[in-house]
View (cartoon, rainbow, N blue to C red):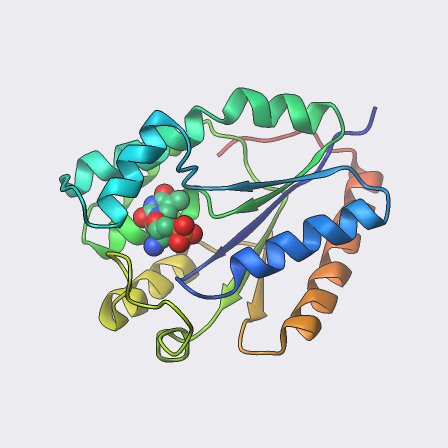
Length: 206
Ligand code: NYM
């Protein structure tokens, strides 16, 4: 049984991650590849509900406490994610640990401290960074509704994302037309499947 791939979308707020991750899962399904869409934070769990309260500014939490909740929200999904990948399901994930570090480090929390609670989580095979300048994101529908959607902060978050990139990341120009972005992502995804077919690498950890 060949394992599924862990494909991750990261980016600043309103960069089109949700649109593109949904389209990718649909396209994989259509081509007979079993795929599942996951989104972090998962606001449906008990921990996720606390996170939602914070993001929608209904409750207050210290920077450290919310950081740990975001991480716990990933940990609670880990066993199922591993089982899915091992059973051949490809996971397309909308945000993950890199968002956790980028947003908290942008608040000036220590970078190493921010990374620590996520050590041991499953690592993605490919990361697509949906790159949009915060000035352009601000023009998109609904911008400003949640706690982090402020220009200066998003600029800082984007810098933090760039500092974490390695060869498993691709930067995608999120200002392009959605169809064009989807086509680019399909090319990169097919390449990732081919690489996995050749390498047969096992799932690694952060
Ligand atoms: N966010 C997301 C964090 O601050 N830390 C994390 O670990 C994760 C996964 O939550 N502004 C932030 C980024 C977003 C917000 O995400 C909610 P979304 O994708 O808008 O639901």
